[in-house]
Image 1 (tube, one colour):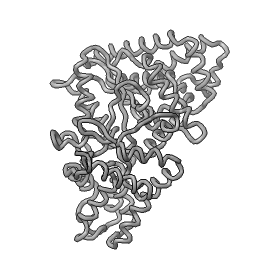
Image 2 (tube, rainbow, N blue to C red):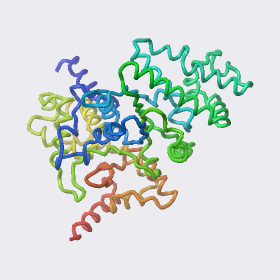
Image 3 (cartoon, rainbow, N blue to C red):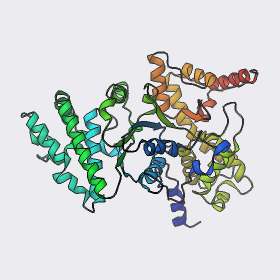
Image 4 (cartoon, rainbow, N blue to C red):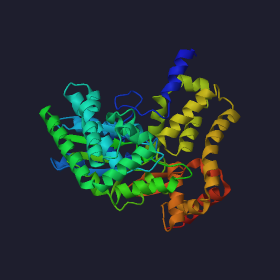
Length: 447
């Protein structure tokens, strides 16, 4: 095969790339699999959209989550397109804010960080709708006014702290410099009512500007906050900061425009509010019965990335479908894992021998097993296997859930109600393999 073509196929299997809805590699799972064939318990985008559509002019504030690589960012782009449409549709101006660009996701977050970056994102999008340069938002926009307000509020605050005295670099400085971030948070905390009034006034004006361009309002989709997680030294404090923002301080995040925030899956478990959770592709029912539509959908994901003739070369024509079936089963219906395995197999050049094929699966599985063995969470994972639920009775359980969800060891599925399962790779560990056998035996005895 020509190297240029192989390079394209390999890059088409980038597991970290989020697809646009019109990308030929993308498949609208909810549109193709409906009713009894629904893969994720129902039309995820439609359910999110209807809350906004039915609210009319009353702004909604909603939370959603999903494991990294579950297809969430792609679905949110689909949601944005639906909300932008008219006849039918509410004709809203969608603003997608990427937290990964705006915030340090390895450090604690707070309300000022989120709202300042949110207003900047909205201002940029409104400027684009007006046919102007979105970078004008960094010249005479909200950040300039916020910087002026901060200095008026605290006269000891030197503009030099923001990098060469340039106040328009405020958000960037908040992301990259802990000292600046903490200083701004302290000022805002002392004058929170004034800060929030300023944010809401800015958004109300931007909403009016969007309406002057023919839109019926603005909807902000604040993505990538589910990637928030600290390092070993601050893991707990980072997640606690997210819990504080979206629980105790949630009223501060309700704005005069529609806004949808992502939250880390671990934090979603701690909140006493409804959080929309994007499930995995269902390959089996809760009782273990094979679910054919899930395998068909996963096979189509593969087909749109790697042509069958290439798979014939790679896996062997006579063994292709059997090995693809094993790859899908091994993924647990986790979309990113399917794509990651395809890329790993392309790196191997040829997997026609069983030993070579297993080597790729085992190497991918080693990463999951190392996480589990280092976590000390085996007892808790055994309970997940037996109960198919996440029971959080104490701090130890919560920490186990935080780490296992962040590492994608625990996967969520949905029928009429949710259930949880472990990634298939970790069942190579003897205790968890035995736990699954015991659980299946126990469930088979239930009438």
